[in-house]
Amino acid sequence: MDRYDYLVNRLKELNHRITPQRLAILKILTSSDSHPSAEMIYDQIKAEFPFTSFATVYKTIALIKELGEVLELEFSNDSNRYDGRRPYSHPHLICTSCKKILDPDLDSVNHLQKEIVKETGFTVTNHRLDFFGICPECQKNR
Ligand SMILES: [Zn+2]
Ligand SMILES: [Zn+2]
Image (spheres, rainbow, N blue to C red):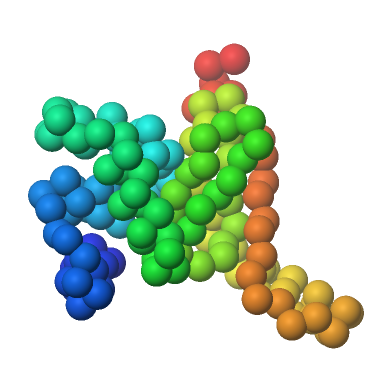
């Protein structure tokens, strides 16, 4: 079962209302690899459902977040971004020029976590690891 079907089922099981707008929001959250903000999702939804309010988008994201099924990336100067494909801690690569956010495939994170546990005795529940820089496309356009 893919993430989209899984989430639709979960909402149904919990007796949440399933509207076409809600399904469209879930589709974007679970298929987009661009870590969209609520505004980006709203812009996409409006094209298909012109009468959708921003509150509908926001509330749906909040609901999915409550279920622990979306990872929220908070930024102090920019909109929060969402990863509905990987709702667990993982490193991100952020272009400070075009604001693109990628999921790099790294083997070293598990190592790092083990090292931290060994060094400090902490029980690590989650982490946040962001790398900021300029993506190859933006480097070309400079
Ligand atoms: Zn860029
Ligand atoms: Zn991600």
